[in-house]
Length: 170
Image (cartoon, rainbow, N blue to C red; front, side):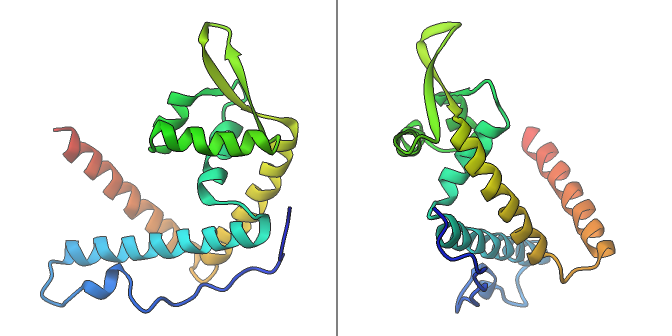
């Protein structure tokens, strides 16, 4: 299933979210656009590498990651909720993975009208391979930052996440 094992280079896009920033924009807007730009670049890098190295997509990887964390399997509705996509999207992804023998649908013992989706042994094996490389890609993207800066960034983003959660609750 693996194509080219060489890691793709992150291509410098001509335009990204941050190119819309002007000095007269509020600092909060500039920060948000910078975070969005970084997120988009990382996501594009991961998408390119999943396609090149495993001939798969990020949504397929994400679905398998959810299943890997739930060995008892997940209902389609739970997958949809966790992945923040529609049930139709989950069904399409699951259908493809099932055809390849990477996931299986099993009747839920608690409710025979519902199916649980689980990774097959082959799905577990393939996901472990992908996850190990994925981890290395992410580590590589952050290699240029010192441990001190990574810790500071994690702490600051944690503060922001808590603040946003509190603001959106009330």
